[in-house]
Image 1: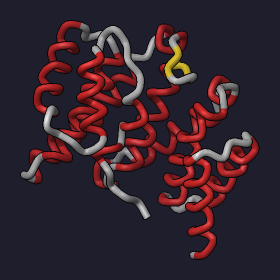
Image 2: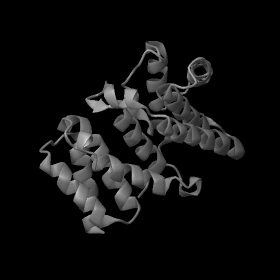
Image 3: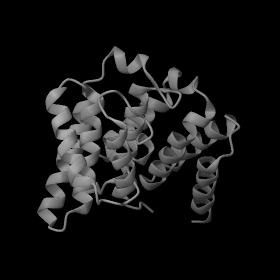
Length: 209
């Protein structure tokens, strides 16, 4: 079953920083990713300003989009939730289209920054409700990332979270054969961390029906 956890959709990308996002902003983002929105409004204003100053920086735009999805989760009124979430998803999508060679060369948590962004977007797109119409794009991103040689050549501990979320998304999309394929790839990488264990539990639950 799909669980909507907008408060943690982009948690996986909250450990990377660039000069365009300072440490305090990163800490506030991480705080929001864990469901504490007490600094969210201030963070949102700061990231809006950062994006205005660096409109061509996809990483800043990516974080701004993630922050807007948090704003959508935090909003009370249905139309406000929809507006923020739609805007956030659109910004994330736009940031992906702005990726340049710089993002392919920079490393974040042992992955090329571009792949990090694609994988995190895939998680987000497959976690939001179906009516936002990002599910197919999210699955396409997972397939793209998990077939990328640069991803497959990365350390196992840097990739297990992507496999785990991809397997969950495949099961939610009723594509068990794809989930089996990715689970087999994950096992071949020989890492039994919390993400590997989570994937194993998901596959076991699916087998039980």
